[in-house]
Image 1: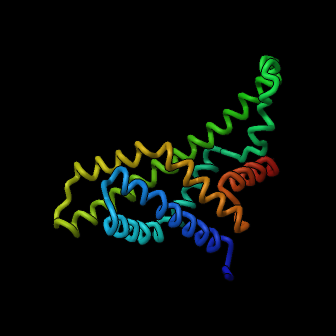
Image 2: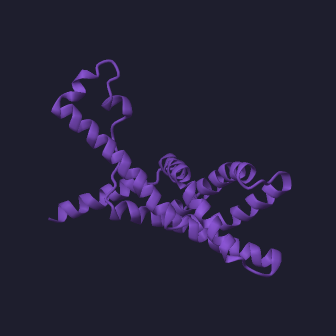
Image 3: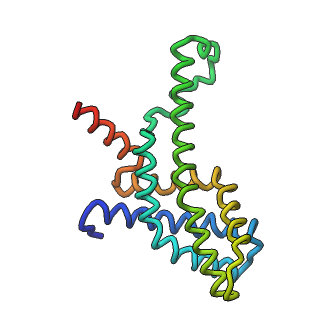
Amino acid sequence: MYFKNVVSKKVAVDTGSRVSYSIVVGALIDYFMGGLTGWGIVGSRATATGINSVTSGPYGWWQDKCYRALKTVPETRTYKQVFDEKNISHYLEKEKFQEVVGYSGRKGKQFLTDMLAFNTFEPIVYGIANCVGQLINTGDVDFHQVVEGMKGVVYISPFIAPTMRWTMQGARKFFGVKTSSELAKESLENIVSKD
C-alpha cells in the first residue's frame, strides 16, 4: 500500500493496531466486566471499531506529544542485560546499583507516560461515546453513569495503557514507522545539536 507521507502511514498503522487491540481486549472486558455475551459483544465491538477508526490517529499523535513533553526515550537494553540472576552480590556495588536504578526508572517513566497519555484521552472518548449511546438507547443521558464508566476506564488503565502502547508501538516498528519514544529521542537530539 502506498502512502503519500509518513503521517498518513503512521495514522494507518495506529488505526489498524488500535482497532485490532480493541476488538480482542474490548471483547474480554465486555464479557468479564460488562456482562455482555454473543451479539452484545459484537454490537459493542462494532461501535468501538467505528469510534477507534476515528480516534486512533489523534491518540497516536497525543501519545507522541506526551513522550516528547516528558522526554521519555527508548530503553535500549533488555531485562537480561541489566539483571544478572546468577550473581546478585554485585548489585550492592555502586555502579551496578545505579545501572539497575536507572533502568528501572526509565521503565517506570515509560509506564507513567503511557498512563498520562491514556488517562487524558481515553476516558473522554469513552464518556462521549457513552453519552451518544445513551441518547440513542433511551433519549436521555445519565451523567452519573457516564462518570462511573469513565472512572472504570481509569481503574483498568494500568493494564490497558501499557499493553495498548506495546501493541501500537510494536505495529509501528513492524511497519517501519518511528515509535513515540524514538520520536522523543530524535527531538532531544535535535535540541542538543542546536546548542
